[in-house]
Length: 481
Image (tube, rainbow, N blue to C red; front, top):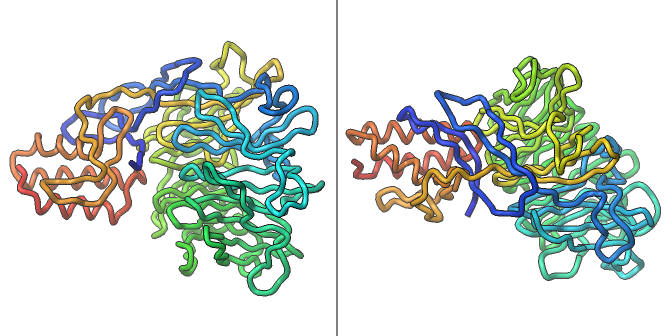
């Protein structure tokens, strides 16, 4: 079941905190008060689970991990972890003190296992892996950039699905479409199910490609048209990227590119459900493929759980998925933290005033693919010099104990085919529509209530405009009340 997180009004003067909950092992729980959208809302509670830290032994290796950053990415040197999370599973790039490096995975609260390391033979059999970049996780599949010899540029993209051997997506033996040599320099990657988008650099020219699971390689963009690329994101079949830090472009694979936004923007956009989160001077924003833009948080916004206002944001933030926009923000007097917008309401996830595992925090970092469901992955640096990767999870308040858990939203026998998203309260979209039905005195009131509900869901990026239309169509046909 597709799962999202959101905070919405039931339009009956009741506020429901929504999302879904997993049950991993937990190391620490804190409750932070957020700013409600309307009326009085319950506080959001988080549990924090350590996934791996510099006291964790390397599986199949010697000693403990010492680092979790991408050796190919200069931006990772500030501590940004090479991590991806999806549905309670973490995949990360880690290294040890004796030249050990690898791609590792762990369920949140579970044991770490190796996907590939420096003992793993390359798929072409010419040697073993040597360096690993930031992995990307999608539908339990993993893609990662890597190389099999010394050097600081990845020379291939590799893919592995559960229970299957690692296979090459592209490498220095793969011809670049158009007869312009082979793939040698690989930049950032982003996986969507079994297709991977990546940047290829060669002879002063960059290109963005998508390679699917049958070996078809599609050109998305060429730097001869856009000069330079500043990060990409791939989800739901749509590739979004920043060019020259001045343009955001996006398109489904195989379709013409669309200029979505023009203006001075940051790096690494994050797309989910056709909406792109990005940093722009003055704040963090979301823009739809159609070009509609709205702010998530601005410089000058009061810091939730802090003092004063936000002064700036990490240029590589944010991470956008499942109705959450997570970002790294800063304020006066050295304030630094991980924050999130949930249904348009800002909340603090964690900042330097908190402790983890009883230790004092000195810095917090957010990976590019940090959000999944009701979980947010982040890296922490401590005063004792140790580092770790943690997951913050929203506590399930379970406000709908008898929830309608149908796979899709069905209204009076009409199947909208829209995923019936389960929220942290234990409520689903169907439950919220049911609340509209209970509070309506006539069919017109029911239709109006559901219309407002779907508009809130669309604004938060939880459903698309098409999905909202499908729900409203079924609503109009229903014999309710």
